[in-house]
Length: 171
Image (cartoon, rainbow, N blue to C red; front, side):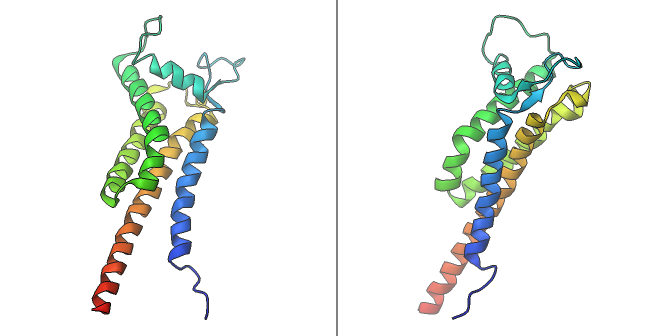
């Protein structure tokens, strides 16, 4: 019996590899510099992603010092904090337990999260070079998760079609 190259098992592995890469990038983003602390200071080496996340939660919870951010900065901070929590807590469950339709919906949400979180680069940060590698890994992890979930949702659809065809043939 010959081995089929690029068969269903290999395709399934690629889909999970995309998602695992998204999780790896997201994890790395927590420890790498995400932004310069004083936005423009040459002496600053950057604030790690976990510290930026804690700062973003101040938009949701009182942290003592009122924010000087305009409303859209606060909105971006809230969106970033919420999407990060959803990424960390919900994405493993969605990958391993969710239905095809829920995976597709989660893929759309992850895609929207990628677009919303990209707004830091596009509109908000005045000097784009102040964003560190951690920001770019964090943001791209949402895009990769969306791609992986779309592929995974499609693979379940292909599997269901194959199962239906097999059932028809057996009758």
